[in-house]
Image (cartoon, rainbow, N blue to C red; front, side, top):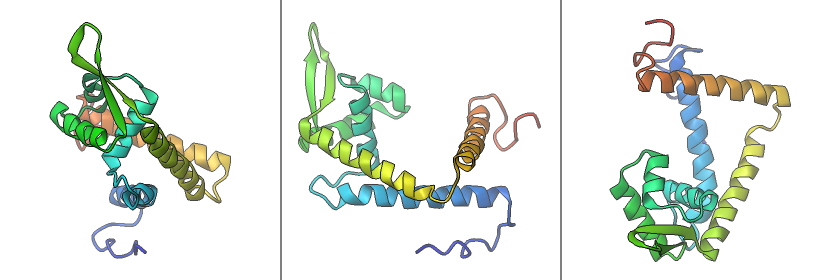
Length: 169
């Protein structure tokens, strides 16, 4: 069990650092539990490989280029992950008619089964995580987190200065 008081030596209660430490800890616990099932199973997937399965479940027939654009990640890194998923029998590739360089990717039946197991696990964990919160509390929390995300996106896309809250430039 993680002791939340261990890392509070240099943080003021209620400060910005405490918010992000809590977000980090929550996501670590959530992802660890979510992927424990597949990590300990025959497929031994990483978090990112699980996310790729989700992408191809939502976008059957997408290409490596589609994935790279969507994820913002390096095409080479994505190609290596796709190769691994193909070797595990979770993805299939089919050349596009008229353009052999463009390969359409989709989940195999095993890939769909693994993705569905991850999805069920994620939904169960989400319900566990918000136990005791009313619908209004959940809406408020989601709204606050969306605002935090918007602040960070604005700062990272030139809409604001990194480290300076929007409107405080």
